[in-house]
Length: 113
Image 1 (tube, rainbow, N blue to C red):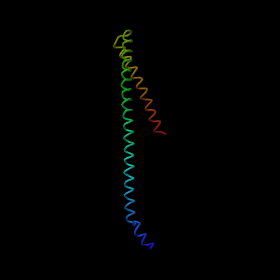
Image 2: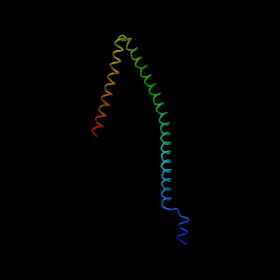
Image 3: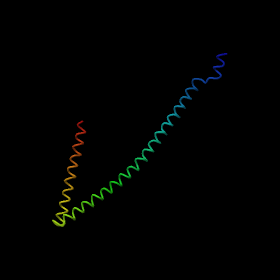
Image 4: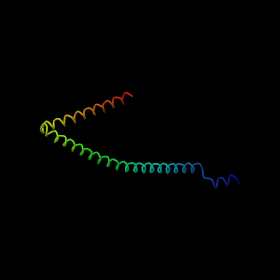
């Protein structure tokens, strides 16, 4: 009687393995969908952050250019437009070179660590 009831009500090993495989497939698909949703959310958030940072960078560059033009115009009254432009350009290139060397030093220091 026990064997008859067990055979009639309980699924076989093959059926259990098949059901387990189906459940595992569904769980994997749900996990992939969750990862995709999280990635899409992160990309959307970072996309707008990048847009705002880009706009801030463009405006900061415009302000820097305006300051440099103002410096050239101010110096032009003292030494003439050519020398004023040369002085400002050399000053900016010197600052750029120093910053570039500092960046290079940071990279080589990171490589040594």
